[in-house]
Length: 247
Image (cartoon, rainbow, N blue to C red; front, side, top):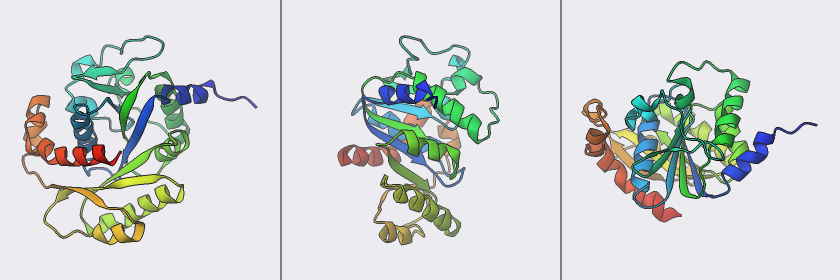
């Protein structure tokens, strides 16, 4: 039986990472990438932090980090691919190799990209690695469950009746595989009531942060500076602090 050498290499690459936090959502459009990027940005001021954008179908973290002009230049190589340093945040994304062109993939295709990207990226020592996952329950999450054994998941959801069922399935899958869930981040919150509350007792998880609906979010993502100075970043700072003190 031939064993893919990248599997062993992945173990070496993540050996120096203390805490791996895959950020997941049951469906797209709930603000998962914004939250992943914001939490990683805040955390870099408290600990050695990395951000890996695995959303190969809808990668957008590089846009939030104002790295569009870097897409025509491959990251540096030194005993592996060195993540791009953005003001102290170590960042890696498949867009550095696709040039932000569409990457149509089926299950096996994603697994190949996943193995290649994770096995070549040299994170070295990190306290936290946030992983911006593709939305849904499919091959990407199964690959992460398989190779990132010490991952502790953060679930992003919106407070709607329709969200409850899909979030329920997400929590059920993660916990049934023996993994931990840090908690749920409720985005676009419109008050104190939440349909997601029904899941906290059922699965013994908590809503660790609520981010209100922010009408001006489109203006805030015009640039990295406006995002950093905007309301969304301020709202996520407390969540980042809370996650930091959980470890």
